Length: 375
Ligand SMILES: *Cc1c(COP(=O)(O)O)cnc(C)c1O
Image (cartoon, rainbow, N blue to C red; front, top):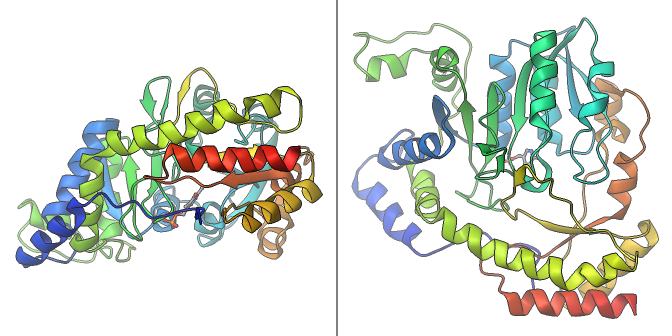
């Protein structure tokens, strides 16, 4: 049996969790949370990284920080996880979906400008599979129209675009450390804040709307309720699990990359004969091997291939039901322009097993089975 996913575990997690317990500090912002913050800041160059309880709550916080509300619009792809949309729906904003590119499955940057109205406040690009969106174009559009950029970099931790870390380019970046992501703490995430001027407000929102973090830094002598907020801090026990992996991030990445490269190489002949399509990574992007996917000819072929792999003990997965065709998507948003690739990608894309420790033997076995299916 080769499962589709297995949560990352390298060994030191247990030791660090014990340390967190021995520290008698298991709530948020203990020793391990701080180590994770520093690691993320050093690695990406943002002014501030804050651990939160999930990628979804990182997006929620970014939406609050954007001061988006009823009557405002956010531009996002329809081909994404529900959390990208929910964050803005929770603020009362309307969703404007645009189509994706057929090569990276990322938002088509060339379609963004025509979707802008006087109500547009935020652009929320999603870095699918940890491959960067065309960020220079997106940042130029945002600057020209005075828009805020919230990067859904849930899948893009340690990936880069023109040398810059995904999640550090827009105003806010949102990482996920869910067990299905490259680095994990079970459930968790991080909000990445590019500019110093937005840090205070983010810390207040994350600390239940209080200025407790200023108090803890000794800047004030008592803390009080100053703005809206909630509790977005994860336990230091979870942060301990994550820190063990961040320390070994490059080793984990190299392990995933080895699997990704074997998939790519072994499946290239099928792509050359036009049977399947392989992922495209633009030159300016360095990706983190978050996933390996192929595109089949159509829905029937994808369904048959997934069933064939399952018969052979291989897990696979597909996603995302296009948000604009889901009940909530219809209620809270509209698709601008033509759906040329969103539904098409949903029907044809199949994700193959990918996790730390998968091993190239297993990847070879999966590739042999895919080839057998096409024979
Ligand atoms: C995983 C993911 C999220 C949500 O992250 P959670 O930590 O599960 O809340 C959001 N957006 C994308 C694109 C994701 O892949």
